[in-house]
Amino acid sequence: MELLSLEECRLIALRTLHLETDDDNLVLLERQLDAGSNDLMGYMGEYYKLRLELKDTRTKTKHNLQYFVKSLPRKNAPLRAKCERNGVFRKETAIYRQLLPNIQRYASRKIFPQCYYSRDDIMVLEDLTLHYRHLKTTESHTIEHYKLVLQHLAALHAASIAWEEAEQFNIGDRYKNVFNELLMNKKSEWFVTGFKGIVFLAARHKKYQTDIAQRFIREKLYQLLTKSDHLVEPSKTIRSVLCHRDTWDRNILFGFANKNDSLPNSCCIVDFQLTEYCSPTLDVLFVLYILVPSVRERREIYEQALEHYYDCLQSEFMRLGLPTNLISRENFMEDCKRTRLFGLTVKALTEPQTKMSASISNKLSTEEPEKFDYYLNCDRSEMYLRVMQMQPDYEETIMEPIEELVDYLMEHEHLDV
Image 1 (tube, rainbow, N blue to C red):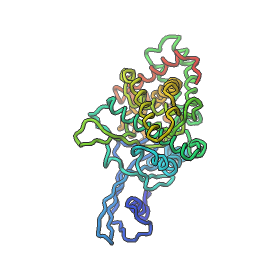
Image 2: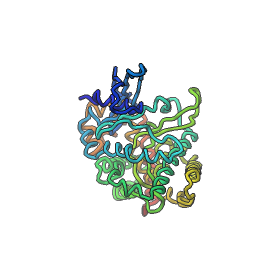
Image 3: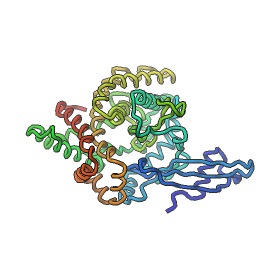
Image 4: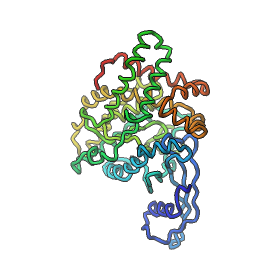
């Protein structure tokens, strides 16, 4: 199956070079589509690099262009069917076409990669790796990295409010047909199966082998977890914004002023499949719970990170001429407390998949697609046990967020969100 036709490739090049679509002077000489590296494999898509060589017969100029391509899964039929049912690509392409360009007009920085072409099953995007990069395996995130990401999110959030204020509308209302909660949704098999997986792991945890803990896990844990899905709805307690909600390390690329610099001076984010209109605290907490690797480090930087985000948001408000009291400091800090369960839950839900080595996850998804689909959408207990045998540090890694979540829920058993 051909991913992109000759005509589509030529159209992509014309758009990139800002030429008219009926310009016959641009001739496509060569095209090359290569599969992305294994560490870029996603759960809701497959990734490729597209390279085009073209010549402008009028100016005799040659152009070598490079793109990042996302497509629906082609090698995993069950996963492709699920993505099609859930409208994963329809949602993301609509966000790229209808929302992000409008928000970019008010932003103080580049907030997303340019989208040059899209269908309901494919997206051809600017290749950010030409100017940005992921951190290397030998590099670790520092507080400076976290601050850059939070600053970027504050710019996105403020720009979305500025667009609403300029046109006097509500993003959630106008684009309600675009938004489709793909992560924390009780109608999602992945979500329900993930909660069952949390209960399974909690029951195995060595800390919870007492009768009291086992009874809590058996009788109360699942119902308490389901309360978290309300947190992703448009907020009634704070001004809602367009939230990215998926800033894990593979979705963040950093820019460096000089090649040999150890610290970045900019960043950009990709992958807007989980984007929703909700409390800005969900983006902040996602960074602190998903990007920060350990409980100890999060506790050390937590207050500093919240203050930094809020200061950046206020700076954006002032730059845009918006009232700074649209979101007060007290309002923001209180909402962080209200939505903390979101951060704890997302960490416990996603850690078992994101901390699975790329080689193991790719092997399972390509060699056992039906079973892998069963694991993701029916029962993950066998998958967890298999990976524990194959990956020595896996169990210890995924049990830390389980412990933090269960401790919190045992302490806040009567939580009202």
